[in-house]
Length: 172
Image (cartoon, rainbow, N blue to C red; front, side, top):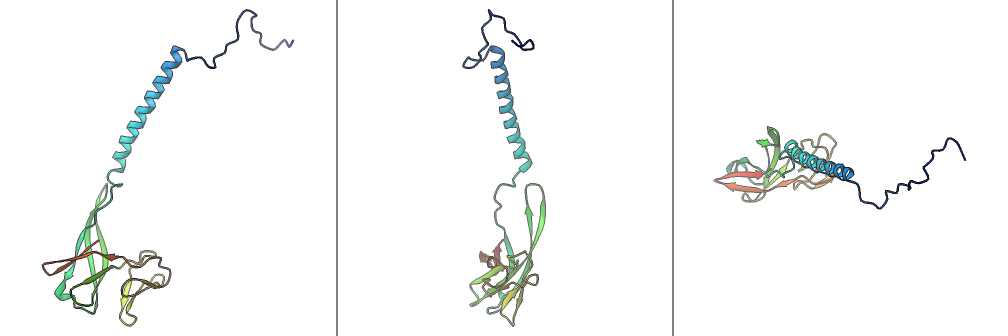
């Protein structure tokens, strides 16, 4: 027998805690830590909602004035700029943008967002090519906004329109 090994008195049974219910102290510890955990999760949920605010809510579109219909003759592509007041979860700011308006018949208007779908540069209309080109990476778009050439992954965004009292509006 090794003299350094701990010895167990001969009359004491070996402690076997497996399969036995926890004693009162252990039960109270488990209950306390469970309560603390649940309260912490509830606090973090409320605090997280406070920090995130309305940022997770989908933003609704906003109608912007494009121009008077009388000043947008058919058969031409017109450039229009807009400034819209936007509000996110923490602040309000002015959003500026570029739109292109065209009509074949003078009653139905097509409004395209002038932002290239590649990296967000403003596209430019060219009469000689009858299309839009992006000066940043040479993407080309047709008059309807479809991709003709270049790195742009999607066509230009076509916006919903409405006419009220002779004024054309677009939903951005």
